[in-house]
Length: 271
Image (cartoon, rainbow, N blue to C red):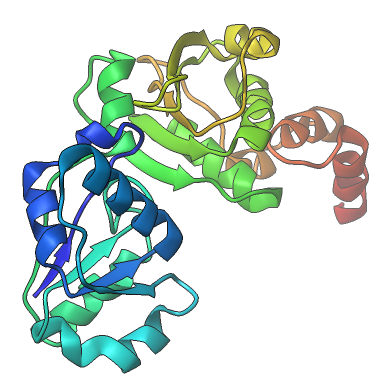
């Protein structure tokens, strides 16, 4: 039996009793990082009297997942197997997706426990009224792919949740300001940890406050949906507009990592 178990996203006390009981009887652990999992189990042993499992610990990630299944796939229905990510709900934006697909394709029983998730926790903390939201995980790091994904996230009509690395947070806010400086955002830092912080305001305001924030740590960004009547232009829509090259170049520069002159030269050459 394979069980996917959420682990705390910060505070170890967020572990569930059910998870501890399953950890104790596990025979095999698939872990995103075996060192991280062993450290968590040691904490649970020391603080909550959990019996440390007599189990084998195997790394399982997007790079070695298929190879691991060739080695250990037959054990999924023979032993008590646990999959855990480094923190939070497994499978969501996580290599555990490979395991779920394998179980479904091979008619292997599996279970997913409910538990901690940075996505739902941050969205609940945002206070944004609409119960509907979209989750975009991490945007592409750069280039047209990032610009297009962000434009879509801001123009899809729904509140949208993103993950962002601390060293790219300022870049993300700058990009959002270029598209819509008045768009309301909610930033959640280090959820359930000692230095947890919440910030809510316009993109322009939060960018101006960035120097007063400690950026280190894990961030969740919630982008509020456009208000009725507002519309953001997409990259393809701007490209198809019959407007002067200088104006189009300025718009394209705001939607990409290229400068106005570079776009202007491109448009002139294209014509």
